[in-house]
Length: 142
Image (cartoon, rainbow, N blue to C red; front, side, top):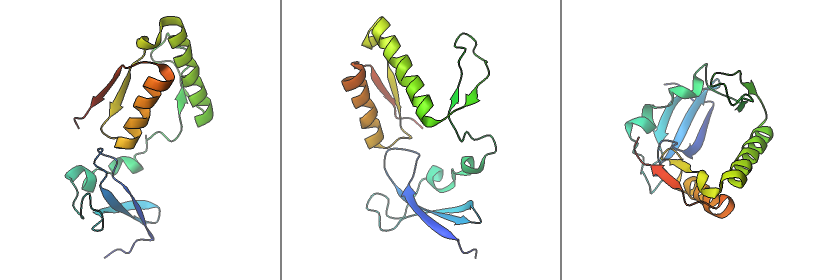
């Protein structure tokens, strides 16, 4: 049996339930995921996605940095990697410009079942308290 170099305790990313998992890592590669028995949420159990749905972690085409496309008129314009600060500043500026030009209800937020309940709560607070819109929806299907 392979012995991990380290075991990382985390929350499963596939839905908002919050199942606790152990990621077994050997030589920098994730090779096994186990449910945590000490978690009152899942008591060691995992759905098929939580147990086996981690191939994306080592995908060669996985994004590792935010990308910016400056030519908004061209759908396939070249994108370049940037920092998180620059990307967030860009998005905040665009949202502010759209809200100022067309009103807060010209913006909508679509939340994800792959986020935790807490993350979804924070996004709806951003929508309502900062942007000023109640256009918030959620797709709970996986």
